[in-house]
Image (cartoon, rainbow, N blue to C red):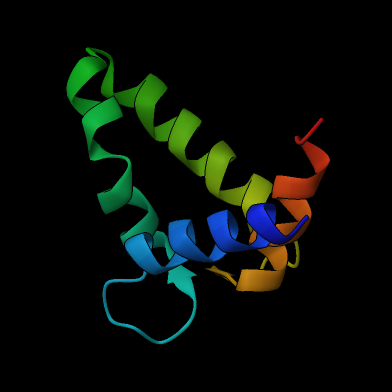
Length: 78
């Protein structure tokens, strides 16, 4: 569990470019731009990125907090 927490905070810190402790939608998009570059259909990519952000933003406030990232990370961990 300790390793999982470290990984969660590492991911969050890499995405949190303004160092405010949360990831907003723009930071999330910037962190996933490589996926956009592989996607030819912009509409499909927009739907995918919004769906992915909403998966992490569990309280729908427009930000991904460390707690939200940890909860989602725990859901997908074996």
